[in-house]
Image (tube, rainbow, N blue to C red; front, side, top):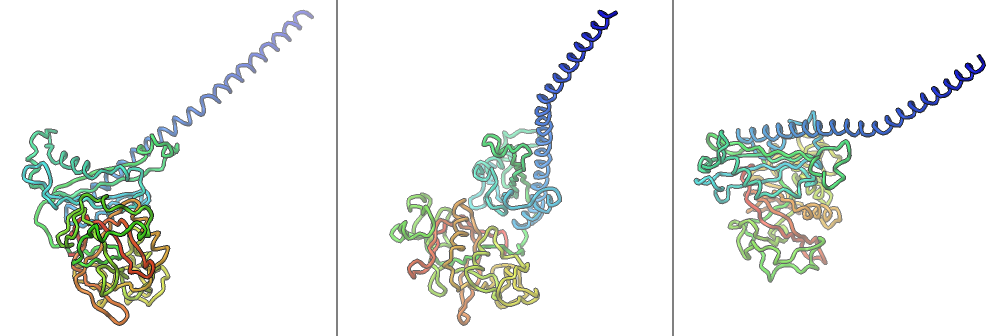
Length: 423
């Protein structure tokens, strides 16, 4: 009996050790598998998030394009994109870049009629991961390929696209990664949803009545493109890394602005009544100084901003507070920026670091800006105003703000005339 008890005790001890060993093994297996399970689960959620976001961006681009095909203008198309996703996606301009597309296909269906192709950046601050990879020529070819393809997928007869007037939206939106993949260069584009939507414009052209948004720069329609002899020395630029004259092979010197073609370069000198460009205040009630100019120059501009920011100046009629947005000089009931309107000149000092930093923010990423073109100016006491004769899109390359008491100037590359609004 004694030996039997000893055997039972030894057997129980052995069983306990074996049980503990199995339990320890299970814990090790769980410890090894659990991180893998979490990563797999996060991966599933990540992919689902990307697919859902892509679907929302696709819906927004199609809604925007449909609005444009029905006669909507570029600014309205950008608003439609944001309104479509406002309940589901962040609308911060830091995570969006939106372009509108317009053009008329030539009779052969293999290109666009000269001067009709427009690819306009209408929303965002050029900060999305795919912004630097956007190639306008590739997108133009992609649009043509879609237009040349019939319902059966046959693209052998490009003439089916001949004569089509089209409008489109190209949108890109950055997605927050659950796994932080955007920090890895090889995964950066995985967390950015893009969509290209194009539609045919059917029916008659309508007169455009919507007002424009613009940046507070007025350029005289009589200015001529810069010659090499008048091109500033690198030491004359306020902005870092000033470009050399030979960097602009498409530029033709001494061309009037009204005959400008894409790539022509204009050195525009400031001075009300004596220069060929002027800084603007969007209304005569806000304090005309460097601070208001800096606010108006900040992307995407504030010509249609009528909220109360507590700015200095006089209370704007009909608002009860000082506003930053456009109010026509001489007609306080007009708050839409159109051809023929009068815009107040900003004759205050603009030699400020804030203005410099804001201009550099545009020059660095190569943004294109819509500005007003004027052909008539009037002096009003110590101030003045410009009359709008049209709108044009420029890309800034340099500037100088009152160096050594000299007049300010900007160096701007002509991109195209803009008749999409304000007519």
